[in-house]
Structure formats: structure tokens, C-alpha cells
Image (cartoon, rainbow, N blue to C red; front, side):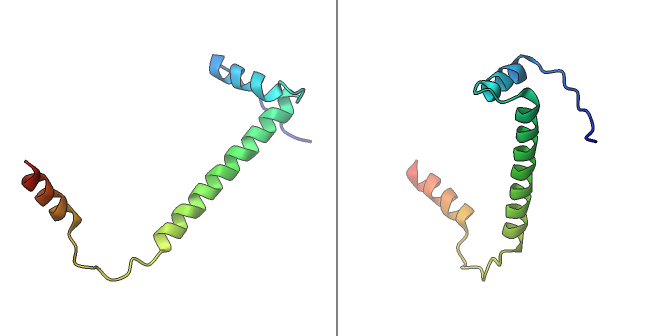
Amino acid sequence: MADTLTIRPDAETSHALDILTHDGTSRSAAIRQAIIEAGMRVERAAAMKRAILRTELGEPDGVDVAQLIAAERTNGR
């Protein structure tokens, strides 16, 4: 049997729940779906972060972007 989950929604959460149940979806189904989708977003974000951290940066091109920006600011005055 599934565990029971109790929430105490604030005004913002109640409004969001009203939107999610406007089409007749039950509160329980809407909350379950929202939790599943939130978990999937967190998993995707973590996977993208891992992929980015594994990406090879390649060889430095010798361009110092900070130095270029500083020079542009100095010459622009």
C-alpha cells in the first residue's frame, strides 16, 4: 500500500493546485504528477551538469577574455 502524504498548502500552492485540477484531475493525481515531473527535471539537470563537467575543454587559444574586456573599457572612455 502507498504511503500517505499530507501537505499544508499556502496561497501560492493552493492556486497552482487549482490550476492543475481545473480540468477535473483529482488533487492526488495532480500532486503525484507534479512530484514526478519535478523529480525528472532534477535528474535531467544533474545529468546535463555531469555531461558538461565531462566535456573536454580543448587546448587554450591564448586569448585572455578578461584582458580584452578591460582594454575595450579603457579605450572606450
